Length: 134
Image 1 (tube, rainbow, N blue to C red):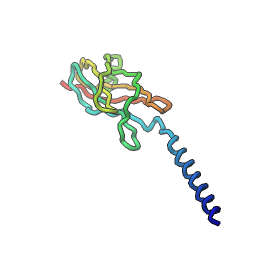
Image 2: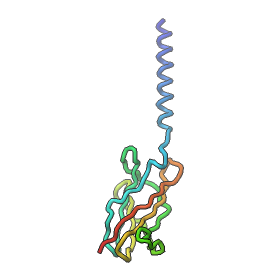
Image 3: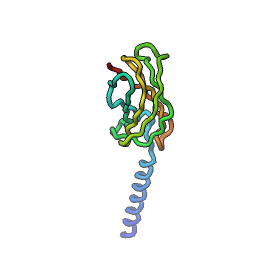
Image 4: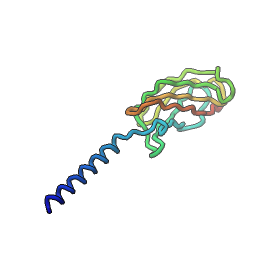
């Protein structure tokens, strides 16, 4: 009788391990990630734009993403042809990404980003609107 109980307990433990192991293999959906502006307003001229990449379900920052697409233009003010160069800058905080740009005019600017998150398939793509002030 005891060996039967041990066998059942062992079998239950193996099932539990198998279920727990498969749960750790489940990956998040790429739509569970988004970029967020740290500050929606910046000064016109030479500016540092700071964004945070977060995992939306738990709000945790996502470090070490590979940002491969950046564009900064005045699309919010109907001038998408008015674009400027965006240069990545080093960041001291995990999940925070900084960019240097020259905002030649006051008004609405749109930062378009594309990134790969390690361990995920697909691309995180966001368009963030900020305002350049005097």
